[in-house]
Amino acid sequence: MTAQPERGQPHKSRAGESSTLDAMRLRRVNRWQAQGLGGGLADLYVDSRETSAAEAYRSRSRSRQDFLNRLTGDIRRPGFAMVIAETDHLVGCAFGFPVRSDGLWRTGFDGALPQSIEQLTASGGVFAIISVLVQPHPQDQDVACRLQERLLSDHQASLGATLVDQDDHPALTSLRSWGWLDVGEVWRPGPTMFHALVFPFGERTAVRLAHDAWTRWTK
Image 1 (cartoon, rainbow, N blue to C red):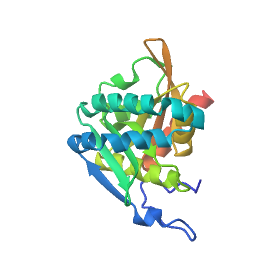
Image 2: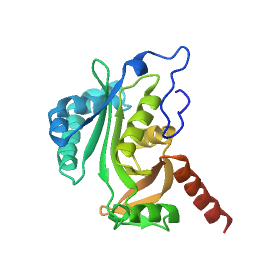
Image 3: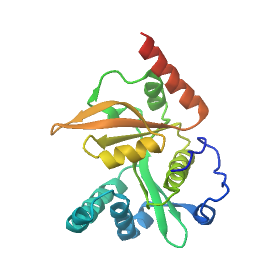
């Protein structure tokens, strides 16, 4: 993994870094284009998962179909948006939708949500990033950061938010390495517990979250 670029700043190539980043293009796609990319996105999803060879052989078809089923539902959400990264082929994507000011995304949250997140949600500054998929690559962290930042920038959001199943350890590990921060747990019918994570976009948002964390820790 390479060092993570500053939030909201353009990536700067470093000596010896692969030319993949220089050749990479980020492109917004609408819901109809996303639907047309379904097969390629499903392959990207499967390839981005850390699985053993035997598990991959058994579950590839099922994983692809499960992803396509979820994607079909996500595309129908109000405000759905997607950004893809490509060279001569698809290397990554990120997609999601704006969080409503009523804060229903955190229904079932265990504990008190940091005040700064409550304020950002109320002002419409939070964007739910459903998924960030990146083809395995030495610079996958940089690709993920570019995708996340572009999606948030396009929607003038200050914070990304997502929920991850507690048993999805590969996704949790990847998101944390890409700059996502744990803020608590959310319980949903099942019962299923999800980790709630946020991605601060911009220095002011990071400072506000850090201040909240410090205030809560010192009480």
